[in-house]
Image 1 (cartoon, rainbow, N blue to C red):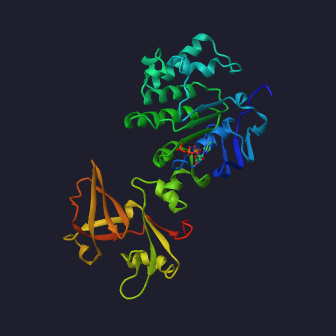
Image 2: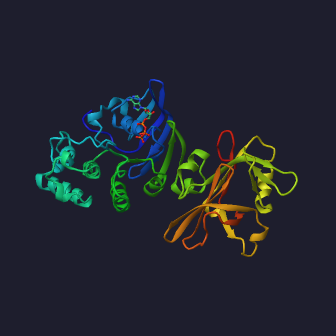
Image 3: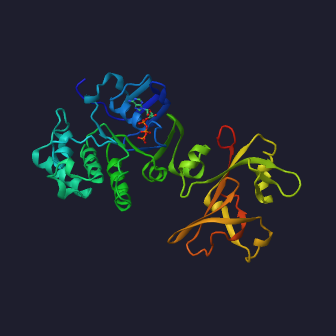
Length: 377
Ligand code: ATP
C-alpha cells in the first residue's frame, strides 16, 4: 500500500488487555474528518491505549479499526501518517526545537512534499503560535516541561496532511492562561483539517470546551458518548457526573423515605435531606426502592440566610466551606457524608458555620440508580 488512507475513523468492538488489566473493552466510535472527539476519563481509563491503537503502536486483541473504510490492521504504523502528540512528548534529544517540530515534514513519504522555504515558514509559524519561536535553536534538555509540551504540540500541528490527529493531553503542563488561549487556537486548526482528531484529557471541562463530541472513558469502556451540551445537562451516570461540572454535581446517596413528616432522602448515616413537595412528586415513586443517588447541579441548591423571606420554613443546614472566585463563590454544606455545593454571587455574605435555609430547585436535579449508577429517566 503506497498511500495512507484518509476519511472517517471507525472503531468497532475494540478491546485491548495488558496481563490482568482490561485497558479497553468494547470500544465503538466513529469520528468524521474535521471533527474533534474529546476523550476524557480518570488516570488509567485507557485514553493513551486508545491513541496507541489508532497510531498502530499496539494491536487490538479484538475488534476492527478503519480509516476511510480501509482496515488499519493492514496498514503498518509508519504508513498511517497519523500526527500523534505523545503524553510523554517523545522529543529527539539530539535535535533542536525547530528540527523536532520539523521532523515529520522531513520523513520520507510526506505528502505533499514541501519546499525548504515553505517547511521553514510552517514550522516557525507553529512555534510562534505556541510562544516558543525564540527557543527554536535550543535542545530539549534546555527546556521546561511546559516548553517541551509545546514542541510536541508544534510537531503535531505542522502535519497538516495527517490522516488523523491524536493529541494525548496536549496542554496539561501549560499554565492556566496559556491553556485558555491555546485551546481555541488548536481547535481551529484541527477543524480546518480534512482528518478526524482525538483530544485526550483528564479534565472534564477541557473536554467539553474542545470536543465537537465527548467520549467519557472509564475503566476502558465508553460510559457516555454525546455532545458537550448533552453531557453537561444529562450525565449518563454518577461516574460521568463526578467528572463534569464547575463544580461537579453534588451526589447524595440514600433511600427515599415517606413516613411521618415531609418526604426525605435518608443517607446511610441517617442524615435526612428533606424533599420539598415540588421536588418530591417524581422522587416519591422511587420510595422504597433499594437505593438512589440524587444528583444536584450547583444551580439546584440555594442557601438562604435565616432572616430572608421564606427561609424560616426551610430545613436548616450549616455552611461548611466558602470559596470566593471573584464574581462568584462556591459555598457548601454537608448532609451526612455528602457535600452540597452551590454557586453563589461572589458577595453572598455567607460565612463558615452560619446556619441557613436549604432550598432545592427541581431544575438541575437528577436521579441515578443507587446500584448501577445509571441515570433514571
Ligand atoms: P493517564 O491519564 O494516567 O495517562 P490513560 O487513561 O491514558 O491514563 P492508559 O495509559 O491507556 O490510561 O492505561 C490504561 C490501563 O492499562 C492502565 O491500567 C495501565 O496501567 C494499563 N497499561 C497501559 N499500557 C500498559 C502496558 N504496556 N503494560 C501493562 N499495562 C499497561
